[in-house]
Length: 140
Image (cartoon, rainbow, N blue to C red; front, side, top):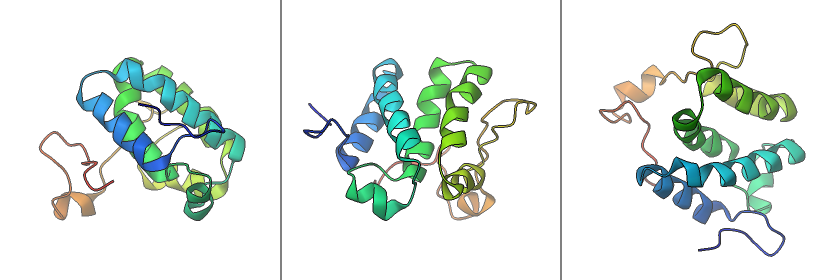
């Protein structure tokens, strides 16, 4: 199954579903190259506006952040996770940097448990968090 367009950019919905399927199937190693490709696109585009990304066939940036973390954490140490996300954080626009913060990502080097993601209390109260503490990807 190809998840790229003729100009080698990922198709949004198919990419998100494919990454989630690889993660659930226990194959994060197969998902990482696609995540690295996406990360490169976000770094080069720098713009994280949802309308802009939709027009370019890219998954929304906040969806990328939410779905990529569980995959990257399965393959890398906490320090490597931080190092993987730092270039993305540094290259995206201010709105993208806020999405890191709003998603609970901590990128600073001194942070214990780099790139830990805390589930917002409102999601817990609304029952949007499964028993494993993961935010479900259903409906994406």
